[in-house]
Image (cartoon, helix red, strand yellow):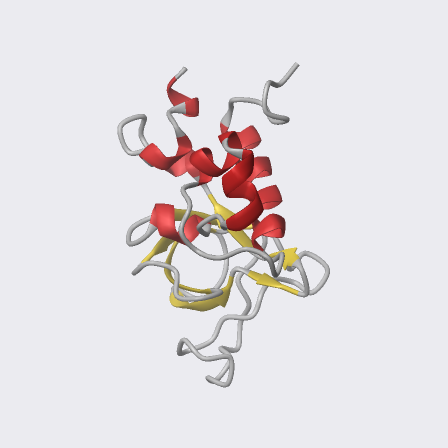
Length: 155
């Protein structure tokens, strides 16, 4: 049985990240605690927040498109703002991305690594409470897995 409610695997870490994103949206959270420290300390849980995946992955991080299946993919915009022009084609579910820079708010500036869709642009991490893109830990070598994950993928 999983000790912390998730399996120590890339899939388990992705499930954990999804759950942490839901917790992060809770209004009581602020922005200073490390994820693992937060998980292990109930006092921190009561008064601080968790960082977003982007804080851990930053520039060059690998991402995968998980949303947009019903609509033929997710919207890609030319610029960072939601008011920026949308590109004609959508980024298809399953596409793998590389971050051009760290996550800015709920937005990711990417270049396409594999899959169908625009070669580069800006996408939202989530919309309407649903994840659109998530960290793709399979894109990391063992040495590159962010230390913030506590080495779960090294075991």
